[in-house]
Image (cartoon, rainbow, N blue to C red; front, side, top):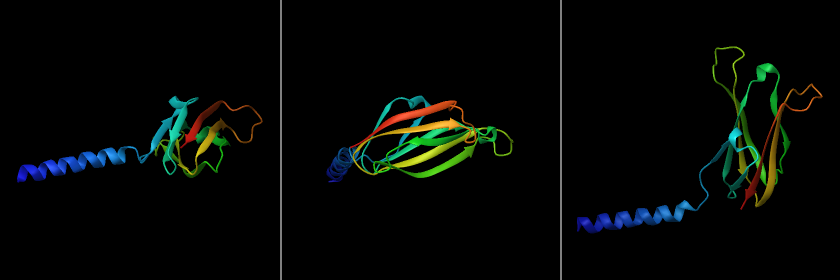
Length: 130
């Protein structure tokens, strides 16, 4: 009787894993290494992007391109590596929610907002939402 209950429990867990594995849950995390690539999300899924940054130099990441009907920014924050060390760098972190099916290019430029110069870095990924 105990063995039958265990078998039923194990079978139920396996069925749950199979059913929920394709639900598109979970965040998709990308970084500078993903520059130029393509990312696929399910509607409702979250894309988390983290890029190296040091705002004390005057350089900041700014959004250059994104279709907000497909991908919506829900959070942008900066996290310093060394809180007590003035001038130290850190990471800019964004969270985007996949709003609707379609394709959009997510492009950010790393530049000083007051300069008319080209950005010193550009990050771009194609995001496909299904």
